[in-house]
Length: 439
Image (tube, rainbow, N blue to C red; front, side, top):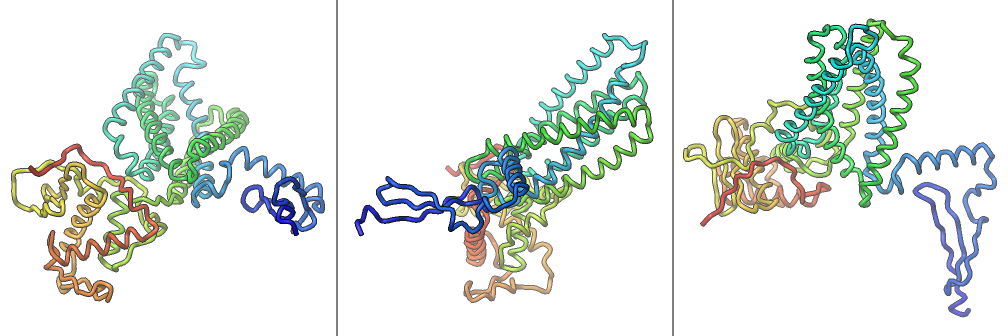
């Protein structure tokens, strides 16, 4: 057979788990013939209803899901989007209830109300919101990336509070209406900054083929459809609940409960593959007790969702300023470790141009220091270090910066961490600008 007449059989599919088409192609590419007989199930044999259903489903996928789904997004995409869509719907309905209260409090339908008073109220409300967003971005901007899931959930809790205030607005009277509206505006401005920033972080996590813009655009399309659906329901609902305070508050309570639950499930569905301070603390603590690296799924499930200013992550000050007090200092400059214990906090002093490994080691030793403070008094060794791979037993009293046992322990953790599914190149933490250098 002439080499140029060699026939190649090609199967081309449209997306994952979609129909495929079969071709016979000559090597020279001059002849391409489509074959349908070898297809497992020809679309010609399906019913009209099935073909219409498949076509509609395909159009919906192309309109609302990123191109190439599910290959081009993270594995947690569908679960997150489902719960995020549900919470957006509940929030939209609640906002409709709040809008009615705001308009009523502004004087709509009241012959005594003036345009000037309403204008001043809206101007002060807008100004308060703008100032609130600036102050929040200034004081908490660096935390939004590190604690994406926590701020994502907190933003929606704050949004429910803002809606509560707006529904309450007509009941407080004209003397306090302006103050109530300013409080609501400040709360919603924080929601806007925190929600928008954390949404960008989630989108970056979901996009797997450099398609962040596409994922973001399709997320916007999904949210628009939800808002349109809520708008239609709102048009039907408002005449029914109008002036009925009991019904309005009952709807608000039910929708808020569902909104918070859906938000919790959405944030809990996210499985970040890099570590922040909380996830790293979970990993190190688990390693010190078992000698193993906890999986991405287990660690994300264990990570707290609610912002708690009394958690152990607040015991840390990363990039701390050195103090002249020499007590309670743990340092080994050869390894870039400089840790101070002061005012109930672990202060980690960072070196100029510190590496990811140096940051990892600083946090590792700080966690080890805390672990040793609370270890059972009858234990003298890390029992799991009897592992033949380590070829030694780690003694608690030998775990000092720069000691042989400590170096071996950290190197073992670092090797296992890098071999795991975690993205070991990224550690997202918030630090101050203070750095030290030797001279």
